[in-house]
Length: 243
Image 1 (cartoon, helix red, strand yellow):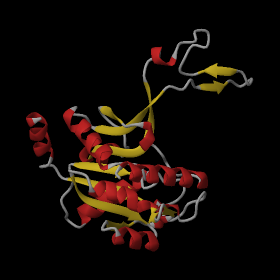
Image 2 (cartoon, rainbow, N blue to C red; image 1 turned 30 degrees about the horizontal axis):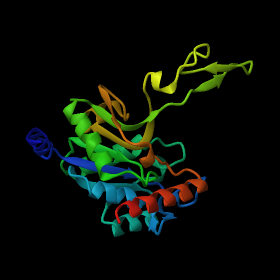
Image 3 (cartoon, rainbow, N blue to C red; image 1 turned 180 degrees about the vertical axis):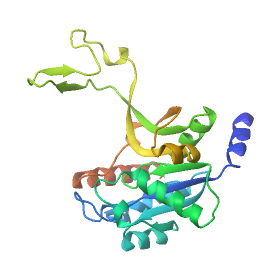
Image 4 (cartoon, helix red, strand yellow; image 1 turned 45 degrees about the vertical axis):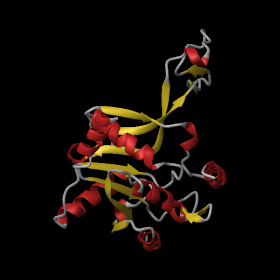
């Protein structure tokens, strides 16, 4: 326990910022990032999770949309407006992260050692998910870390003739799931990177990459209308656990 406290104390000397990209355009759900979910704007959940982190000193929302900016400020996040050319449907999230770092440099603000890229479409993400992903990167002396959840699914694809092809197993040997090698699904919720390496590689995965395993019940990425009902059910269930 004392060793853990010493580690966390050392980690606290690092500058860690969270960046939450939240563009205004959304094909599937208009204004998705601020849509009402269980009585609150969607983006407020990930801002709250970042606010509860032991390590994050600044929360920045990167957006091209004034309404999203207004909501983010209401929940006490800093906002950096992103140019429309970096906010298209096909714009990778890395462009938003790089734009934030360029802005901080231009304003002569302290360059963070660690950046935490958070997705505002993942409302079930907890502060502990964020902190443990940061701790995993630092304790393993890694360059990047991200959240995953265990998977026990047998995956298949099709060849050009339409025949089913086994991807992660041998179709001729049907193992029990508990006898299979563990595999993990990328949750899409938390990515942690050393900023110097990110600026050099311009991608969320580089160098030594490690995984932080989180439980399946906290994994949800809102992409379709039906996902909102699932999120609201999960949020209400979490609230009941605290009563």
